[in-house]
Image (tube, rainbow, N blue to C red; front, side, top):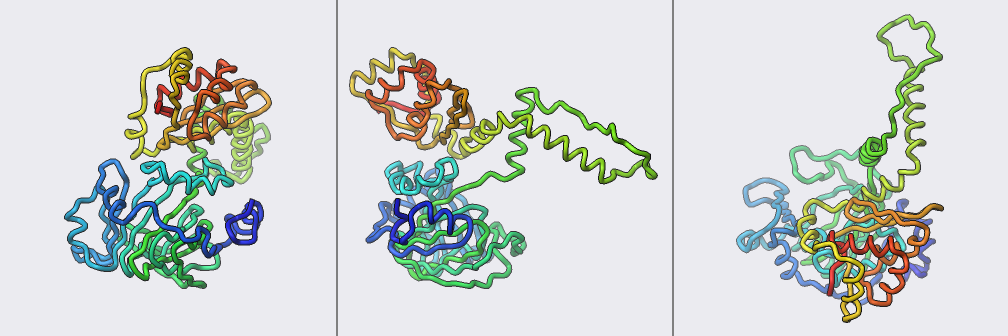
Length: 389
């Protein structure tokens, strides 16, 4: 499929730009109008369960780059100056499911890589300072004009200004500068320094794609090794030779340790997909309470059949993350950091239970042919992953 109006298809974009270099896409969304107004965004920031930040370049208490975390109040907005401040609201796609359609355009990138849709509103000269991000991001201009400056090469050892809540670069020399108008979009790979400044009152949609760190995955792997009783081998040195210094850890010892750890990871290879699936579907702590509101008693298959027969449909809970994997023995569905195993017959149902937005009676009639899949759907309903409408 085409990648917007770039002359590239989606695969060509991935090969040439994804995690490699920035790309400006003029009128990626022609005549784009934000479905949410600045006033509605401010209203979301006042809700206690919604993550938000107010960033003032010149704080009212005299400090530089003052950060106020939500929930915000009317008085917070009333005291603001006319310029040099930015409002950021996270996970708007989950709080306003009607925005999911905008994200569906990016489904050629794995869903489990997607973080959230963050929306920012900035007054004239508002910004969050020059910085780098550890993730891929598409920056869609939704209202007004924002000037983006950025470097041509990634910065992996960024020097930051000390003493700030924000991670602002102490040195920033841009290589390019572009003004984005409504409908324009900029793609930035990880670690590329960038600085966005509002030319006038503007709104920007940030579609971010996260990637787990090696430390995160090693920590998750250790928990899985303990769960499965793996990784019990101990350091061995049958090739030990006389050492002149008894307290020295020589290079041979380090090589043996490295070999032992590699063998342990190889031993856990069948569990690696489970480790990844559980990790990337964990619910953000700030969203867990909202997500759990849809939980209910465990239904049985007859109850599901009866409710589908009356015309009800199941809606997927956007506050929960889903993923799935398969191999030659079966598959697993992941939701909220938990895994649910199916046999080979149930693998065909995994996309249905994790990728679609709703399930109808037709979907249920196909899914229930596999009893394991049907029972998993019952469990997902009880956990709040799916709810009736």
